[in-house]
Length: 220
Ligand SMILES: [Zn+2]
Image 1 (cartoon, helix red, strand yellow):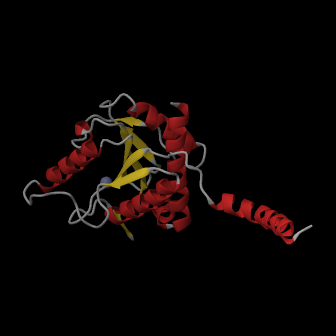
Image 2: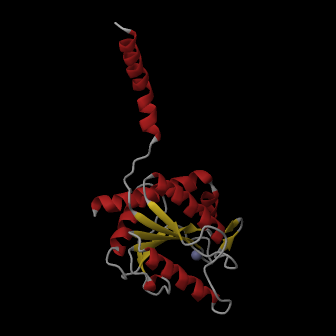
Image 3: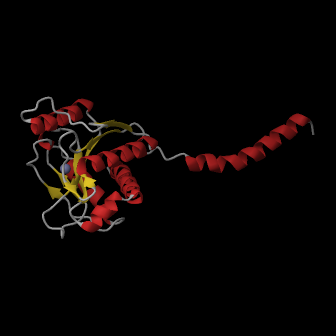
């Protein structure tokens, strides 16, 4: 056996040791080419809901940025309505409306396959709890997306509420592309307030949401 043959055989042996490690570290690319807009609710002077250590605008952005990384790793093209602590308003009078209009316009301009708005819920009573998905009938896909996400989340985490149709949201009435609003939990509930602050729970939630997107396109 000449030295080249030995080299080739040794190379194959080495490669067979290396391959499983390499493939294990590469995520699936099931969302390759999908365009997703992530919308972290509130920002700037608008804190959103606040309870104990949680300021909604900050946690919305943390979840969105984690989700962005997860979706990029699965091959998606990801756009964010905001990537820092600022809102999208261009006026001081009617700031909230201006912010919401610009978010809707941004989403319509990107024209994604799907948009996801991330918010946190709050109620006067600490009794209320659960992640809940809201949808409008502005796009015919919205209800199916809400159902797919909710069913999948229900089978993986506790306290997921039924989907809710709501056509009154100023922002979502203006968006023509498919998408939903995810209220990731009630920060007025002590258990969920605690959970939402835990990195392992944030990571779990983000993976489940990314899985839900994949599942929706698999079943579509
Ligand atoms: Zn909110």
